[in-house]
Amino acid sequence: MLAPPTTHLLYLHGFRSSPQSAKARQVAARVATQHPGVTWWCPQLPPSPREAMAMVMDGIAHWPASTMAVVGSSLGGFYATHVAQVRGCKAVLLNPAVDPARDLSKYIGEQTAWHDPAERFYFEPRFVDELRALECGPLADPARCFAVIAKGDEVLDWREMTGRYPGVRIKLLEGSDHALSDFGDHIDEVFAFLDLAPG
Image 1: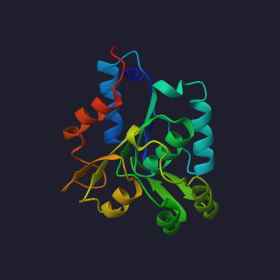
Image 2 (image 1 turned 90 degrees about the horizontal axis):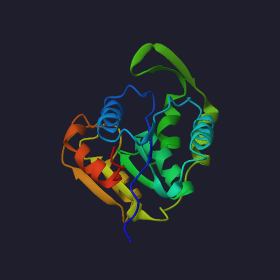
Image 3 (image 1 turned 120 degrees about the vertical axis):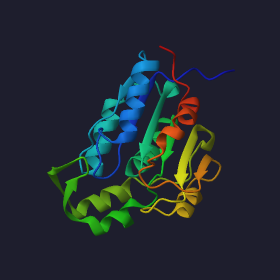
């Protein structure tokens, strides 16, 4: 039996990022023009991982798990893994953070927002523990995940990323970068995997 098309799509941005990220805007534009009937949500996530997940889970509480999907980039990929585990939905992971509790512990203190340097937030020590609390084991259903991972990622180690997701379909890029500046070259594959409901 064919799986029903995706009717609800959630996008989770990375650390210091926002719904204004290039990838988020590209996905939003494509959903709006080619899949206008799909429910689209790309929230601005608060710095607290606990608050971010509470907001996300509350926002998707009434979404149908069987026809929803989540796309997450970097820290958003870590969050998306958690969402996929809890809801049993499809997930696309773009250079997903594997151990953000370890990696972000050195960013405790005041941070600037990537897309608006005038906007500042404070990354608190307790956020590291909140990240640890969201860690989950091996994916229950690797076939429902697709990861795009760049060997050229200057922030995260591609070996660690691929090692975290055994059994998942992975598109491993020889070059590229953490931001996946060439995301336009891969968006067709992402959307083919997501299988969004037509307009």
